Image (cartoon, rainbow, N blue to C red):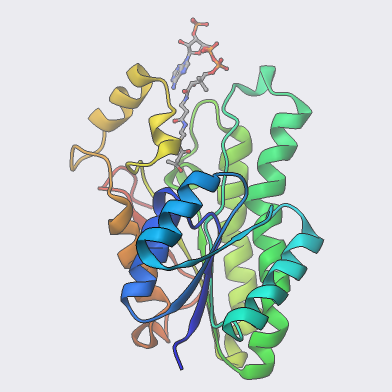
Length: 240
Ligand code: CAA
């Protein structure tokens, strides 16, 4: 039986590349999305990957969404917490809504989804969780106090859950992509984006497939001894 993998935010950007790469590696993939029906339909039509619509910031929706995936595809072996949003602005202008939206999706979503799968993974003695952090959680970024807080938080979350899960056959790791060729990065003001790319030692944006390849490795049997780790994929932009 093919292993079952959930990729949140799995229909566009790094998430879509990860959904496709996991499918190519032999997994049965469930890609979740919140609103981009067009991208979801395109992914399903092009690849046959199953898509499911709910908001990862909603605890109850995660519980019922995961239950539906288990009914449709079987028990969940792999969870990739990729869903994330930005609400960039300097802190002195940031509204509570901008703060909370990013915390609730990026960090709350990670908790909600892990909470929905962890019990069954512990019972079955197997699981792979990869949480998507960011170079900006490691290095900080002007205009991203909310986003950087969630992406740094994900790293601590990953280490704590890795410790709790190690004796149960479950590894928990993070990837920290740098600036990658995705709709999220395309939305950065062009002059600021060009300044950032100019400071990346390899001199270009990352490709979503380059992040996806790292995720496929971290969920593989070959990576069974790696847990609590954060793997940077940033073209040398930040070394920690
Ligand atoms: N560095 C230094 N100074 C900056 C700056 C920067 N990056 N951005 C703005 N400033 C300066 C401005 O020049 C301005 O100075 P003056 O008052 O002297 O004119 C001052 O700060 C305030 O600027 P704004 O009023 O434009 O600030 P703002 O609060 O409206 O928003 C911002 C600024 C649009 C958020 C801008 O800082 C920005 O785009 N930052 C980068 C955001 C970014 O990289 N986001 C990444 C999104 S992709 C992603 O997150 C994926 C991933 O994981 C990598």
